[in-house]
Amino acid sequence: MIHILGGGLAGSEAAWQAASLGVRVVIHEMRPVRPTPVHKTDRLAELVCSNSFRGDKIDNAVGLLKEEMRRLGSLVMRTADEHRVPAGVALAVDRERFSQAITDAIRLHPLISVAREEVARVPTDASMFPLIIATGPLTSDSLSADIAALIGGEQLYFYDAISPIVLAETIDMTKVFRASRWDRSVRGSAPLTPACGVDGGQGDYLNCPLTREEYDRFYDALTVAESATVHDFDKVKFFEGCLPIEVMAHRGRDTLRFGPMKPVGLVDPRAGRPPYAAVQLRQDDLAGDHFSLVGFQTQLKWGEQARVLALIPGLEGAEFVRFGMVHRNTYINGPTVLRETWQTKARDDLFFAGQISGVEGYVESAASGLIAGRNAAALVRGEEPRVPPRTTAIGALAYYVSHADPRNYQPTNITFGIVAPVLDSARAAVSDGRTAPEPDPKPFDNARGKKRRDRKLAISERALRALDDWMGADLKVGPYTGKAVG
Ligand SMILES: Cc1cc2nc3c(=O)[nH]c(=O)nc-3n(C[C@H](O)[C@H](O)[C@H](O)COP(=O)(O)OP(=O)(O)OC[C@H]3O[C@@H](n4cnc5c(N)ncnc54)[C@H](O)[C@@H]3O)c2cc1C
Image 1 (cartoon, rainbow, N blue to C red):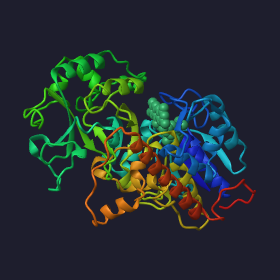
Image 2: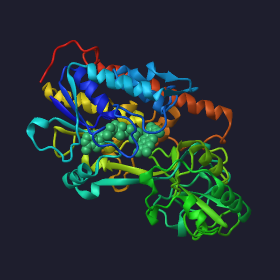
Image 3: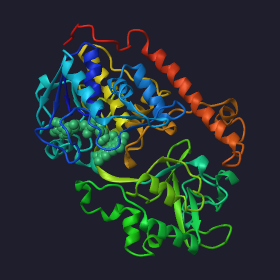
Image 4: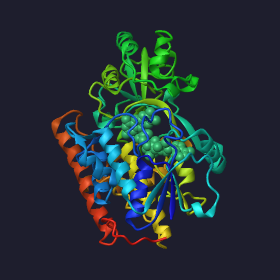
């Protein structure tokens, strides 16, 4: 038998997977006995905010992740597909029917039972293991404190201040320049191509320079832009170190110019002097496909972020990989605590899954529960825990959570930036050191857009082949056949 703390997206998926492999499961869910600040019902897998599972085509990373989950017999995906509502290329659901259907599927499964209780401490009784902790971003206070004691207080975070991330290919490189403040760079001495932004010397950052007029226009738009709904728990005072940019802006016209938009130590090579203000973009993944806006955490509505940030020179046509957020989020430092199998490093039979394990988003939370549930069941069945290859989206997520840089760990959505790239022959030659890199074609041309889409499709097609190979006939989760193990 396995025990799962939390009947959210991750916990429900984990339970379904384990039970589908013939293993008995108990889910411990505290609602309705103890509510959270955002859940509104006592249903399992309640969607706390948007009703969207985001893109549903495989030229998009979350579309690929969903397709992989379908192939792995995901309850969350099957139910989402059954209760979808029109949403263009995205998969959105009727939230009431979705969570009711998951609750019913779990309730009717002969191998799963649900105990409605708060688990206030990490269990120590051997009969509670294998144990999956999937209590989400709003894990109750007492359990959070006990988890902190177990893994080390500095490995558990309670707040997330996230800056937006843009796709490098969509930055207008003719307007930005590469430089580090005061020329303090950790880059090597490789020459920079114009495609990397006008060369302002060696530098780790792309800098978007603003004139006084551009700054004023940006400032005026920012101070009237609409913020996302603030939940009660978010009304707490923000840490001074991670104030949303709109909050800083309301303190005065120049606050941002002395904060995240300060131009000091930067010289715009075109003008030969510091700009009036500057936004710094920092490389966010190894491949250099993503850049985050430094110090730009924000609570603006996503549409408003797209509109206001497009006023920054260089970002007029930028595509956002992730929007900024500031919200309560309990999560562990995955790379310090977890293995790729979602088991803890300290204990084979203790797993974390869902948002608390250091992923971000409904689909990603359910995906982590899917693998954790299978692997906890594997232990009961006397089998080795396994993870799909890194070339798949679900394998890449597991790798990121367990292998990213622990010093600066941030929960992630699935993106192609964390999936191993497909190298075409020219790229392979460069990566082998056989030829020098060609400058990329000009941004915003159609051929470039098509090439980017083809590259994503190539990654997805390779991922699905790799997943099918990995699954083999025996690993496919089919309908429950009635044989219980453990
Ligand atoms: C305010 C907010 C808005 C969000 N909006 C979105 C969004 O729009 N789109 C998106 O993709 N992601 C969103 N997320 C992020 C995340 O995807 C969701 O929080 C998602 O529900 C996480 O799934 P989970 O299974 O990890 O946690 P949850 O779905 O929260 O499930 C955890 C469960 O554990 C229970 N629990 C907690 N403590 C205990 C305890 N001690 N004992 C027993 N049970 C316990 C809770 O009641 C809950 O049912 C949001 C997060 C927050 C906080």
